[in-house]
Amino acid sequence: MELAGKHLVLGLTGGIACYKIAELTRLLVKAGATVQVVMTEAATQFITPVTMQALSGRPVYVSQWDARMPNNMPHIDLSREAHAIVIAPASTDFIAKLAHGMCDDLLSTLCVARDCPLLVVPAMNRQMWQNPATQRNVAQIRADGVEVLGPDSGSQACGEVGDGRMIEPEAAFEAICASFQPKILRGRRVLITAGPTFEPLDPVRGLTNRSSGKMGFALARAAAQAGADVHLVAGPVSLPTPWGVYREDVQTAQQMHDAVMQATPDAEIFIAVAAVADWRVDHAREHKIKKSSDALPAFNFIENPDILASVANLPNPPYCVGFAAESGDLDLHGEEKRRRKNVPLLIGNLGPLTFGRDDNEVVLFEASGRTPLPRADKQSLARTLIAEIAKRAPSGGSLLS
Ligand code: CTP
Image 1 (tube, rainbow, N blue to C red):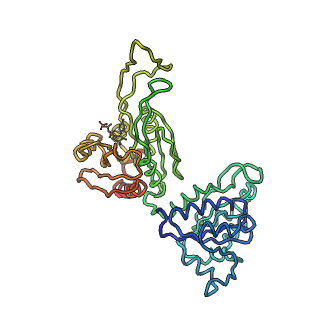
Image 2 (cartoon, rainbow, N blue to C red):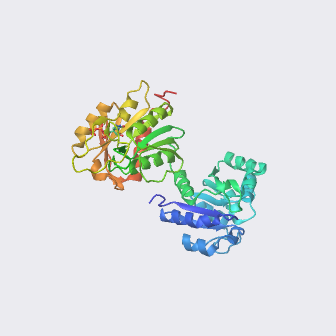
Image 3 (spheres, rainbow, N blue to C red):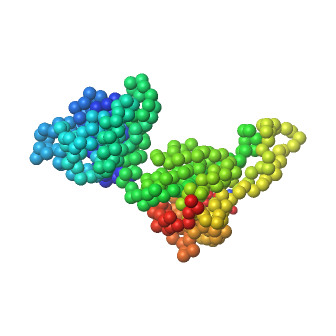
């Protein structure tokens, strides 16, 4: 579980977005975190401590003078146990207090007394967000090392539209997970392809393959969590875009090739995970092919461009990582493919056996030899692979820009 062993203080302040914190709490608990909820008096007007206790499985603290703590110092004890404090939703007033180090209730006192990271998830009306005082306060807390997540833009509970609404619980959850990951790719620009491609035969039919896109999306998520700027070029898959990742959807191998070639000058690392169709028909029919009794349809195939090889053979390529999904003799095909594609690192697996599965077992092929990695779920494996890639990709090395 992603947050196993992590203890979070989740602080709610007064705002209608409190209803979103029920879902956030559920996500955090499901991921293995222990969640200690602390609420301001105002927050209890929006969601009850009973609801938050039921979801977190722990008694909720509101008052600074809560006698349940043996030493009567909840402001010290609660923050000492925490790996991070998350304020969600964070009201205008609470952000102002943080900016000025004020502590007139349990939650604000906890924040001032903490020795762990503080994450703040603002939620407020757009005018309150735009108010110069709020903007000053947000800039101040950022300068003090507080991580500010959001806000989003869109329609607000008050009926107005603009910046200030709280990011969705899933996004807050993703950002909290990311905050625990070491920033081994901070600021590095990573380009990733993922998923299958779809090569049309006619307007309703086409050629594709069984790639689920899970491995490529897991790598995009892990790279973003490691602090990279991630550009994900995705074939047709129905997976949610990982938090903080820029996603470009394509259908065909040619479209994927064009998108990648356009993005490559900005990339320091290119990870080709997509299962790209090797062939397409020379011209897809404009109208649906009708079943006829006299002749079966026949097609001429032509080869698609090899995206990875095109990038790897540029005069000054990014650090290129290939994937190989083989149905047998991985060692032979893996190393042969690494050389043929001219890439420093190729990650091989027995692909057809793992398509769609949530775990995977891979071998790293590079000039110095092969390194098998233990079987793991795709998300943990993605973190391991990102760490391996970060170790190898030269920093500021072979860049076009
Ligand atoms: N690849 C690519 N463009 C293609 C084909 C493959 O970028 N047109 C990339 C894949 O994303 C992967 C690597 O090349 O990183 C190997 O893909 P794979 O399908 O295993 O290799 P092929 O070159 O197609 O060889 P074969 O199908 O004959 O095994």
